[in-house]
Amino acid sequence: MALSDYEPVIGLEVHCQLKTRTKSFCACPVVFGAPPNSAVCPVCLGYPGVLPVLNREMVTLAMRVALATGSEIQERSVFARKNYFYPDLPKGYQISQLDRPLAVGGHVPVRTSGGERPIRLSRIHLEEDAGKLMHEFPWDDVPTGASLVDLNRAGTPLIEIVSEPEIRSGDEAWDYLNRLRRIVRYVDASDGNMEEGSLRCDANVSVRRKGAVPLGTKVEVKNLNSINHVRKAIEHEVERQAGTLDRGGAVVQETRLWHPETGTTRPMRSKEEAMDYRYFPDPDLGTLEVDGEWKQGVAESMPELPDARVARLVLQYGLPLADADTICLSRPLADWFEAAALAHPSNPKGVANWLLSELLSRIGDADRQAGRVPLAPAALARLVARIDDGTISGKIGKELLPLLIDSGKDPDELIREKGLVQVTDEGEIRGVVEGVVGANPQQAAAFRAGKTQALGWFVGQVMKASGGKANPAIVNRLLKERLEQG
Image (cartoon, rainbow, N blue to C red):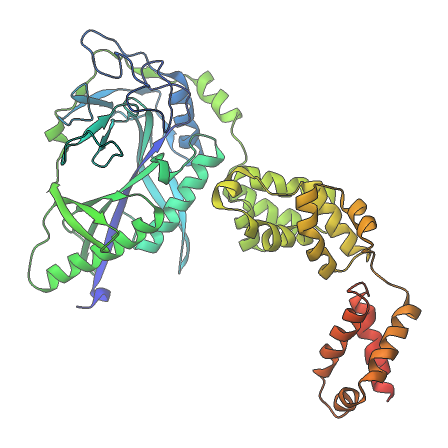
């Protein structure tokens, strides 16, 4: 089988939980990890006779995502009932949107081997979440093989972001999801945590022969609970479908589950069509109208978007694109950097280098997202400033960093307290150089014979003799002078 003979055609459906305090159509709190069925009421439990009331904040947050992706917000959209029977859907239907969604169009850019290109969006629509079936639990009194349902999540506000089938590889899907997650986090519409189910993705995958126009048979892949799993599942499914066609078989339209333990997909059920859900307008919810004042208010509250901020950091601070991209991983982290750069404006690139190489390695993804860097921006700025003005060396700075983190003290105070001020007196350093060169005549002769790497050894010896306090630039210059004199 030659995968190069086939073109993957991939579209992603991303369900994004919105950061509201209450549910879509009732006043129950949106919580994660609460005792099962404790955050519920007659509305989200689907009791007869109850009426839904739309959560305005749900719409506002959805509009923020729509504006951030360049989608067109519709003045009028309609809620529909999506009818199906499942134990985690207490009403017997899900309130969603079908032919008149909140927003249409827009795009999310992805980086490819040929450069950056946009992946167009088909729609962004509002809907409520279902509950959660539990097949494994810690209680001993549950019969073997039983399943339980937790309805805390039922009614939680969601948006579904549907891409056009323009993604061509697992790598492009990976980049698309990372970019989309960064966008929803930047506009503070969602925390984007796939581990907690705040961001969930289904992949529609098909393949066709290179150069063919008609689309292949589409397979929906579910159970993708990490961005890496999305990439791996797509890669596997593309290979599986291409292999089926190569053997003369036909790809069956179905829903398949991804099993990360085996790295394979398996059939779940035949693929439903819209008609199977018997959509019709929800009679309890009127037309959703978004007037110009509401839309303008949301637009005026929008922050600087991540791609624009990356470009500005490159231009304003002279950062490499990759560094700016990492710093703009989250708004709080980018805010932290800019506060530090403002405190030491003469060397923002040095501040960025220390943030990326020395601080981010000490924290996990959750802390990066929240901007919980273990040092105040002003403290890092002052540390870099003391390296720049020669008060301490970079080596001493690295030794000082954990002390700063643990103590919370001002860098100047800790430098004085530890006696770490860098030695810049040439007379003092020259004396150490003379002693080291005089004690090692064989290494000095080797340097003069052309073994230039011996200079590095001498630098290390001088730094060791000075307790690491000698200015490295002065040490290098004086050593060269002394060794070349003979």
